[in-house]
Picture: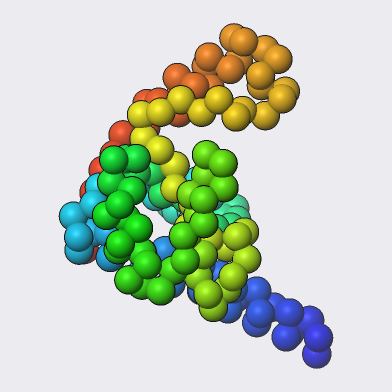
Length: 146
């Protein structure tokens, strides 16, 4: 029986991430804040279209946003009951019902270069340039409703 309980806990955890993602993106849509879901959730959505059996889960929600919208984003997400935490160059909104930073809403700044690349990328400048160019090509978009 412990396996059944563990599996149900896993399913419930995935549903909490999806619910948090929907709640946050709907609130941002409602207030007109441009954003894009990136990271593990974006990859999972794409993979699910191509090969549903290959889909993997993630605990956090990564949102590509403009840094100039941070004040409005903070107002919107704190109104949902999320708590803002600033960690160096990272802003995370944590859900008090699941207070781990690993389960937070992480903001990724659109149009900014990320200098904190992993050491194995920093050592090879050609690879670093390639990664930065790919990151900077992401564009801001509004989630379509429907």
